[in-house]
Length: 311
Image 1 (cartoon, rainbow, N blue to C red):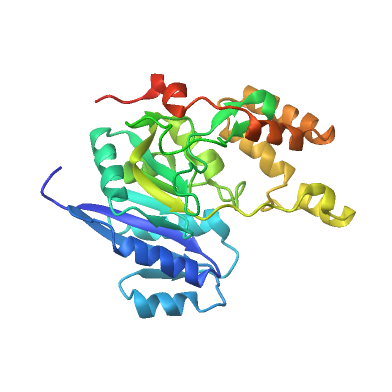
Image 2 (cartoon, rainbow, N blue to C red):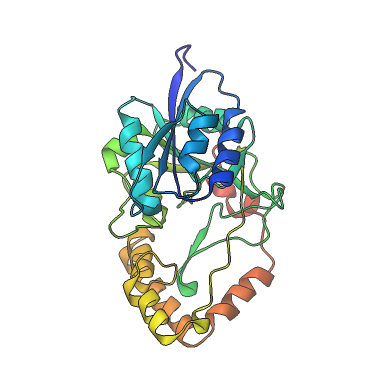
């Protein structure tokens, strides 16, 4: 690396998770920033729990942008990135606030990005209550099962020991070169108000940016909450969630956009959407998920052996 400090802007949207946000910032404040100039932008989208006040008290150096409550994840991130770009960073780290970091995580992300000039790099995401277990890292596309599928049984011991190429990086934590943002734009908040990462890294890949997972970089994430089942909703609520509320995880429009815009191609996306609808209508989606959780998985070190970067 050059002796000149590499500027990294950290951006996170937050809403009413004061204690989680502070925990995240405390962890971030303890990382190794040797050779880096790290500045943080927090977009507080109308929190009512005193998040912004607590951040100003404990982390006065953090830049806080206040939203009105209608930004959600995607536009909240976009607002923070736009502000951070005025500082002139070489990289932007887009992240969630419900995670803590290995102290070398950013060093490894930046080192890999520096070696691979047209790369976007994600860390190994792990569960903080099961810190050996992989979380939403390196999903694979399965058209007959409705699109992107996450692994159920992968651990720190089953992944490649060098960076490997992937087709999608989940947006919990993502190092994006400023050059990629200027070339390809920001996340699509109109179609993806709450899941902008679903199409963002596939779009970057289609525009010639290499997507990599750096296994030495480790980030520990809060487990996802299990969403309410569709069958437990009343008719009015079900209709609203499926056909009106684009922010809802069950939204069919969101599913359509994710498949068609975030899939390997529009044709495969439409085929995956059809498969998803068949599984859902016939009641086999839960069965398919249960089979995925029960089946034996080959280690990712074998599945992605062809994609490992050896330089």
